[in-house]
Structures are given as structure tokens and as C-alpha cells.
Image (cartoon, rainbow, N blue to C red; front, side, top):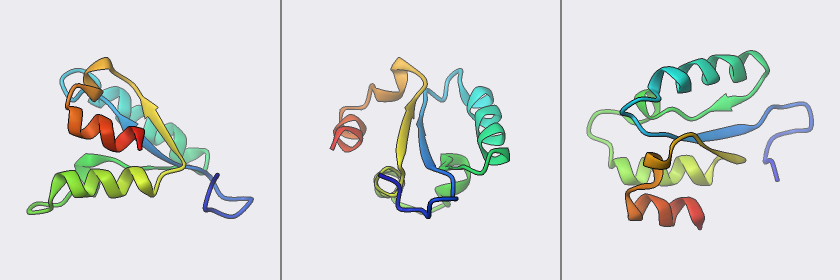
Length: 85
């Protein structure tokens, strides 16, 4: 269930393999933004010096939906457990 108001868009967390899907994720992010949704994006939401696992966990928890874009996006077991929780 969304934590946003009835007229607000969804918060979406993309889970993707960085090796080939970054351009696709950026395009999806632009399209979703134009439709009033917010997408968490590691390249802008994780700052230098941040604990990246914590940032990802917080991004997942704060999201209404998780969008899996690559089988490689879930190859790290620690990240998989967070996403499934």
C-alpha cells in the first residue's frame, strides 16, 4: 500500500544489473517521473561515503513497488534478502 496521498504517484525501487541496464533504468525513471511517480536511483540516492547497503535497504523500505529488471540485480544474497523482506 502506498504511503502517499490518493493523487500522488508511487515510489518505485529499481533492481537492475549495472552492467547493461543503466540506460534502460534512466529512461524508465524519466518516463515514470513524467507520470508523477518517484524512482529511487542509486547513482543519485547513494552519496559518497554512504553505507551503500543501508541506503539500498532504506530505499527498498520507503518504496511502494520493486521493479526487477535483470536476473543479475539479485545475485548478491544480502540484497536479495532485503528485497524479499
